[in-house]
Structures are given as C-alpha cells and as structure tokens.
Image (cartoon, rainbow over the protein chains, first blue to last red):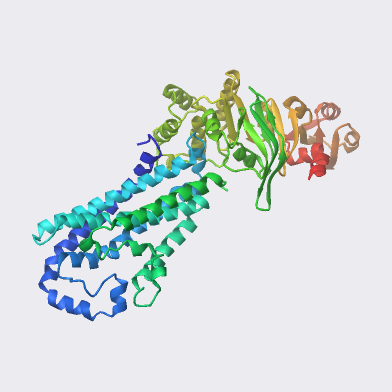
Length: 269
Length: 298
C-alpha cells in the first residue's frame, strides 16, 4: 500500500470509498425497490409530471417526452439526469482540489517532493487513484440497481443499458475532478479548485438545463460540459462516442495543464 | 564543490526572500547556516531543492543544476524541512516504508539502528507523537538512504538534550563517512559545537562566511557579576573588549566580546558571590561584528 503515490492515495481514500460505495449502492437499491410502486400509480405520476412547470421540469433534467412509468424513464429522471452525477462530481471536485492543495496546505508536500519523484508523476498517480475511486463508486451504484431490480422482480428491463447509463457518469465526473486538480496545480491552495470546481459545475448545469426555456443561445449551452453528458437520453440512445471522447479529451487537457502549472511554480509558499 | 550558488536571489512578489547569496560548501564539511528567523535560511534551502525557483542567479548541488537536474539531486540528498509536516494517520514505520519506496528502497537494518539510537518507537501513529518524536522521524527519513548531502533546516527544534547529543554524534559519523552536511540554525552554540564553517545570513543577505574558530573568538556574552559589596564599576569600564558596563548595588552588568579572561582576573581582585553568563544573542553579534557590512549591503 506504500509502494507508490497511487497506492498510498487509494489507501488514504479507503474509508471514504467505503461510505461512498455503501451510500450510492443503497440509494440505487432503494430506488429500484421503489419502482414497482411508481409503476402502479403511473397514471397519476405522469399527470403530475406533465403538470410540472416547464422550468422545474427542465431544472431536474426532465423532458416532456419521458415516460416515467418505464424503468428507463424513471431512472433517467430520478437518478441519471441530475442527482447521481452531482453526487459523483462532489467527491471528484473535493479530491481534485485536495490532491495537491491539501498536501501543500498541510506542508507534507515538502517530504513528498524531496524524493526523486517528478512532480508530473505526483499528479498522474493521484488522478489515477481518482479514476479507480470513481469506478468503485459506479460499480457499487450499478450493483445496487441490479440487486434491487432482481429483488423486486422487474422483468421489462435491460441491465446492459443500465450499465451504460452508470458508466456514462465517468467522463463528466473525471472532467470536474480534473478541473479542480488543474487549478490547484497552477496555483496553490484548495480554495480556487473547490470554488471554481463547484461553481462551474452548478453554473454550467443551469445554462444547459434551462437553455431551451430561457432562450440561452445554443453556442453557450455547448460550452457547458453537461451538454455532452446527456444523462436523460443515455438509457435510450446509449453513450455517444463523440461526447465521451470530448469530455475525456478535455479531462486529459486539464490534467496536462495542471502538470504544466505544477512543474513551473513555487510550492509551499 | 557540493553546493555553489551565484547571485542567488528570490523575491516573493515584492517581499524579500534572499538577495545575491553566493555560497560555497565543500565536500565533507559540516556547514552551518546561521541566521535569525525570517533571515532567508529556508528560502535558500528550498531554492537548492527546487521547491521554489530563483528570481535571479543559479545554484548547483553536487555539481548538478538545481532546477534541470532536480530529480538526480533529490536522489542523493536527505532533507529535513524547517516546518516538518508528516502524514498524521500513518505510523512512523508506514511513513518510512513510503519514503523508502519512493527512493527505490533502503537498508531497513540501518533504519532500525537509527530508530534505536534516537530512542524512537516506529509502530505508533504519527498524530500521537510529540513534536520531538516527529522531529526524530524527520531525521531518520533524511539519514536512512545514506545520502551524499544532508540538508537539515533547523533540525534540533523539539529534541530533548539527550537526543540532541545523539544527533550530534550522527552528524560526526556522517562527516567521517564522507557525507556533507548543510545545517541551518538560529542557535549559535549549536553551530559552534558541530560545524566546521559557518555562513551568516541576515535580512536575506549572506553577510559573512567564517571558520568556526574565528566565530568563537567573536563570542559575545552578557555577563552579570555579583559582589559581596557595591559593584566596583570603575575597575571594569576601561577593560579591553568590555562594554555597556552598568551597576545596581552589588550587581555589575557588562557585555564582553572575545574571551572572559580580563574580566575574570579583574573580578578576582574582589569577593565574587556569583557570576552569570548569558548565551550570546545572534542579533547582538550581528550588530557588534557585522553591523557595518550589514548596513553597507542593505
């Protein structure tokens, strides 16, 4: 566990990983067991959803065309459009800002960097740990959905597409983690990474979700990473390779920028 | 030449770090880097290790460029930071394993020997260690891979006197083994005791580099002599190297530069009840011996 920075970082995350997997797993389980009740009262629910103000509907990522009584519609609305990716973005931004920011604030960066380990390696190892952490949380999330679905005997579903929907959260999660990491790489301290990371996640979500209603120009919507996430469609259309490639590409660019900044700046001042 | 800096200058924005520091440290020396807090000791050290980049000037360590060859330097240097911070949730042993792995492995027998000598328990969590114990862990971490150069930034803070003796013994052995030591301190007696040469830094500028013997001859002491009657002030006022003579009743105060010989002989002509010599204060030494140069350069 102390073999290198990657394993040490994972070890530091282990308690947090336990609670995140437990929480997301149980939440998925709970939502699936809740689904048959929804299905029974689908007529009333559909009416309720149809009568929601458009802005509310938009804010929660919904679309008029969604059939909430289907498992795909239900999970898209309740989990994948908004709620789940926001949860994963929370830990991604916190870790992204903390990897360098925390060690620098605590002063432990001095003993770490006095070893013959290059600075770029510190960033890559820690970011790799975030990738593994995210995959762990997503695996637990998926396991919760499957176990819950089997337990309540859902039959008209495609477990494969649920896996696609779950994995679709990986690029957007890593993107915001990389954004926070990039900022702490360029400039010391966690504040900037946390502030901009959370601020941009929330702000860009509003621009995307309210885009059509508020007549926000399309090019502005396209500046929002959420535009390429498409959690509301993924259970119908699958992952769009272009969107995934774009988000992962931007993630790589942000990590590279973070390395560039970290390599050239003073540390611990 | 183990450490060489040329015109090394660092500003933090407009704030002064160090200015035009030209340092030479030879192989096998224990070099003391003496200066009050805030003088620029840590700034110099952090520049040598490439944690911060100089505004002007350059530095070589072990003949390598401090920036371009940073990783090669790090592999051959042991470092104790001035403000030592360690991972509180790890045990001492886990921390050392981590550091050893990042360095590509160390002789674990030697680590245990160091821990024994410093009377350090490896198994406890770092957050439960006293500051002295954390400092010991910092020292073990710096010594464990037998580096060619030890850069120690105020390493003895928090160490109790016995451990400090053991640390001095380790320094001596390191020197015998051909290792070079660069040790910063604001404690003059410590530097006098363990170092061969001393660089004195004040307000960011290196104001003198001296052999320790030369520095000792400049020792400055505040002396209080208590007589059994009124203090004979007149006997002391005109003694060489004695200044600031004052008296209150039987207590005579003065400042002595150099040896105490003349003062002691003069005092011995009276009945002396007590004699108290205070540790020389760095700032006094600066003002007395380096005042002119310090003013000249600043």
